[in-house]
Image (cartoon, rainbow, N blue to C red):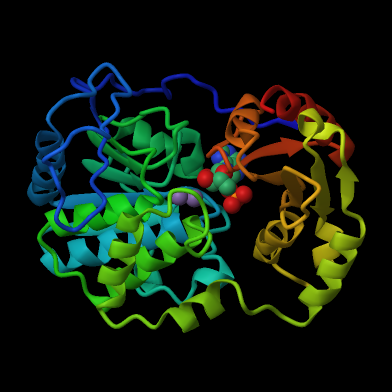
Length: 378
Ligand code: AMP
Ligand code: MN
Ligand code: MN
């Protein structure tokens, strides 16, 4: 089995930033409460710097730029794309800079379930990027390699602003607006839009809401704080109807999906002794499963939500074979096992309860590499 590991290098040609600002903010509400710094947790050498200063550096940089390049992680989910689209629409409303928004996939295809998000028609393929971006902002990418083709552009950017909420974030920007306590990157994107002084229109709110509702598992996962609901309320106030959003994101699929689901669930395996005796359930979604009815890769994304129901298993894993024959692995835990750490050890990333990695080779070998990591994290 081959793992796709981030290289850990400073990408080629990258000039060391003059100054690296690391921001850890727990401000998730429209009107941040700065009376208590109690939940601000330092994460890096520059942590503890005045939050307002870093936010204003970001806002000042964006206000002064004539060209702004936005990028979210490859094979974007609703948090990555929705956050980027919200900021794209806010920057376009200001009108002071040319804005390019993309992600580094080739072929460049917006996932089917995200095509309802306002602003997707404004996206450009990665080739539209300038060789050396003046200002670049990344969304929901825990490391530079998650930018795919745009990794090299990030390495050359004069100013690289990283907006993210992964604890595993490598702080690869010149400004790192990284908050592991945030339920979604959309929370930080909301803060950015608000600080840009842009009106939170319904279209902007829709991208943010899609990110928030996705990353909180429809307000079910840990991290679904009162502040998350306050933000959701603020976004819904713009006129969003949550029903159709849920329908687009999770509640529709072609009839052929039922056949795929039946095959995929039928071969699921329960290993009670795995994950330190807490139990593991896993299955695969192969290219052949999808090819029978010409189903796109993104239909495989929802399978984990069924598999993880298994009450005998602490950990659920789905190996999804992409168009290039690599396994895009999704892992979920119920809290006792840190799947984020297990996936980071295999070159991936994510959070304690939801994480993933990319690998190549027989599924049995991928699982053989994962089992000891799950046992170690139990
Ligand atoms: P998913 O299973 O695709 O919904 O992803 C769950 C979490 O794991 C998200 O936070 C992803 O950003 C992260 N993740 C998934 N796949 C990878 C990967 N190949 N490399 C790094 N992080 C990943
Ligand atoms: Mn994401
Ligand atoms: Mn996210």
